[in-house]
Length: 195
Image 1 (cartoon, one colour):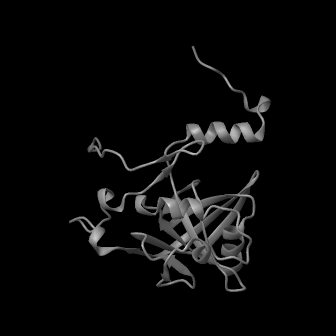
Image 2 (cartoon, rainbow, N blue to C red):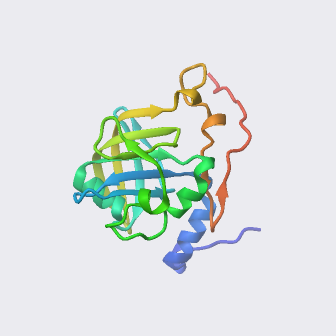
């Protein structure tokens, strides 16, 4: 037996809850950006993925035109910081509805350093920062998709595996689930792709 929930008979709020408890786990893009007034913004987004590998493009989705969307649109730049387990409390606190003139870096006490290729900050203690220039924004329903062309990826050298790629066991990425649930890094299993 299955429960059928029809979209046309479900409120927007209830559909959001259903989708965010069904599409799990979701990686977290901890997006840093800078406003035209010079305010450094930092906010987590769990609608996030790789959109293209050639050219390299990542995307996050803003439900509504929030500060990260506005800053990325105005400046044409942003950074996606990996959201590691050891910063979970700060990641969560940075999601509070701060006004645009308040920097989450300062309000939450998150240490920042300049990005290497774009004019905004990155989270100092995040093991990976993906620096982007704005490729495109697309309005889809009540959401704004922000696509960024990757210009540089900086990785904590101590968290690289022997093959030169980030090691999942040491970067410890957190994931969003439904409700107020978060997912910690779990067991890693290996499966070769069939040829």
